[in-house]
Amino acid sequence: MGGQACILYGAAEFSRDADLAVFASRDNLENLNDALSDLAAEVVAVPPFEMQYLERGHAVHFRCRHPDLRGVRIDVMTRMRGVDAFPDLWERRTSFPLPEGLEVEAMSLPDLVASKKTQRDKDWPMIRRLVEANYEQFFDEPGEERVQFWLEELRTPELLVECASRFPEAARHAARERPAVAAALSGDEAEVAMRLEQEQAREMELDRVYWAPLRVELEELRRERRRKTR
Image (cartoon, rainbow, N blue to C red):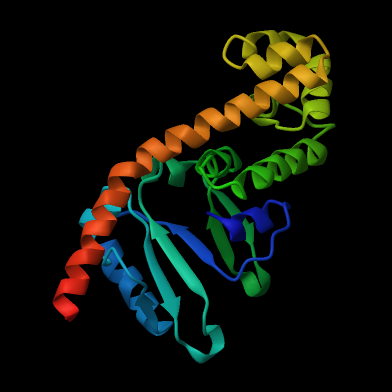
């Protein structure tokens, strides 16, 4: 997930960090801990690398000390707002081939887009690029699922208007849940842009609400750590 997955899907983004979605079982986390040890990865700040924090929705942050990867950051999560549980993510994953016969498993594109709907301003242009790239790549191979995805997630007003015009029946159905599509059916790009801004504001607020109790917990962990180091 994260920036590396965005690169794989063709929405170019330079990133020295790696964000991982993991299944939080005891055996799996022990295996991950062994791999992180090979990278000389150390936990940065709080929370500690423990199942209870991952299952509550926290991210655990690591910094690599291995000479070949010095400074690279790895963020590990199990639960994310608006995203299904890991077993469902794994079933929908996309496998990308790498050199020397290797491959990497990435979140499906719809799941990756959902995970990017955060309160961080920088994530929203990436969502736009991800969906644009998919729309352009499969323009001549739409398919029902892709059309539904485009109508649900396109964030480029002119492309959403074009998509609604190409697939009016699907757009009329999508418009019941997404006001931006209703505006796109009328061809009003200014109205589409306004509706998209409202969507973003709503999702950012939902993310702030989701993280509020987790931030309180993190602050308490920081205070406890400071007390222990005095």
